[in-house]
Image 1 (spheres, rainbow, N blue to C red):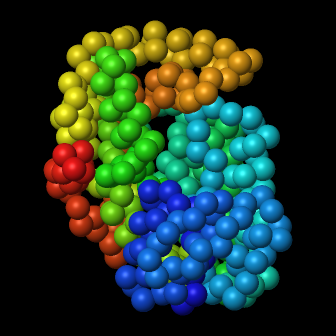
Image 2 (cartoon, rainbow, N blue to C red; image 1 turned 45 degrees about the horizontal axis):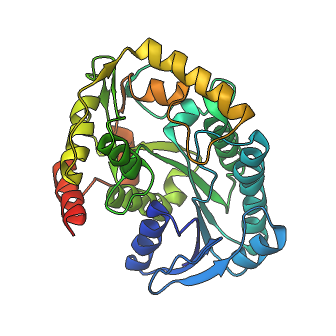
Length: 322
């Protein structure tokens, strides 16, 4: 099929584009800067620009939508315009173009209220209880996408959890940079079980959702490696792969949440040049369990992760060694 992938210049978006190419599809990438995926066409533009979206979707038979504003801080209006408005615009353009499949790449945060998640399936997206503008707007966008599911227009939502891998400038780079300067504390005991997703596995799950859209449309799926580990162990594995000292200093989780709230208040008045060092959402993510039951995901998508966490960390170490 002719498939449009939005946000293909990112780590996961690029991996998804390559997975779809490997499956034999013709891929067009749509984002603000060139994705540079060999074998795929590049169309530059913003998801907020109607003419650019119409041009990108023209002639497409399917869409995989990853483009989003992903941040712990920023203007609520920007999140609304990109994550909600952009999704609404893309859905309409995809239908107008005659596309028959639409995969919305979401996030488990759309159904996270701040409490531990212990072996849950993909619960319904809830913008009201979601923590922060990113989660809120992704929740609203997911509801928009699944609400557009109809005969002849199969929509699936996929929620990969904490995606990482070599070349990751977000999760991995931030952890390593903070560990290198001694600013990566463990919150609470560090024993909370957390599941993550190696990038190749996330991409293959999204590609599987696209292939299976006609059979599983209207559903949301949480995607992980299915190997939950204590947060202290995960952080240590990442740090060792990068050749930096793992964190040893501990901060009470309650204190971190309080500090996160204070940082958010300051950032709202005077934003920093980078991501805030702590937010309430980040404190919750680093101190509470969040891992998911993968049985429905694997059965419905007829998919299993191919790269284990240990293999992923070995690949990460090789990338840092280079």
